[in-house]
Length: 281
Image (tube, rainbow, N blue to C red):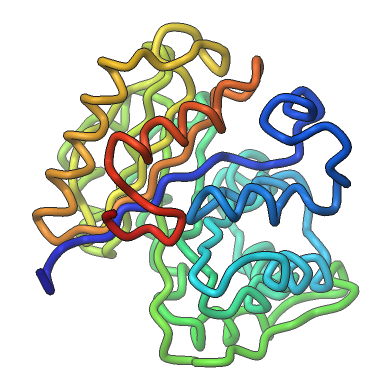
């Protein structure tokens, strides 16, 4: 059906030594790990961008190492979310967007903005931040052009300036569990991340955008536990329901501590009958 949403199942990051010899075959060159993962998933969450500005050449390399239909979710920098706490971030956002994200081209998926647990809901601060987030690749380029000298090799030339750009916000303080927060996201078309964190942080299951963004950090033990078959079936039902309503769904497994993430992601994809390309089998 033309209004059927698309489901993408993936992993949060792909460079984990513990996965070598388990998910990754023994002897697989480290530079081939992204390609190997991209043959099994339709998306990955790029989380190195959270810790520091990445090089434009890295984004280009990641683009070239993945299939045409692959998508990267890009995690926003912690300088914006954790250090600046969303305040006075125009230059920080410009630097982030100028660092090379547009090299991903059509493979650029949602930007994830994860707030730390200590940040509480402030409607004015959040609305001012959301107002700065570009909704098109052309908007990304326009903001990126205001970068400063911290970006050594800026790149902000969109292949298609009209390409839509999506954003999702993950919060970790219970003060965000309020209609005002959901209304702000809805007004900007920003997705409220549904995070499963073994009860550590709020699980906000509220639709605020034409797409849904799910992060599975571990159902019974944060970052560590394996997902049971029954729990994955419940998530599969959740994904089917959203897709049937016409919403795209992005699901990323972050229970990587014992290497469960890629295996659980493949099990969920199998339960949904989703191929690597992200289409129903």
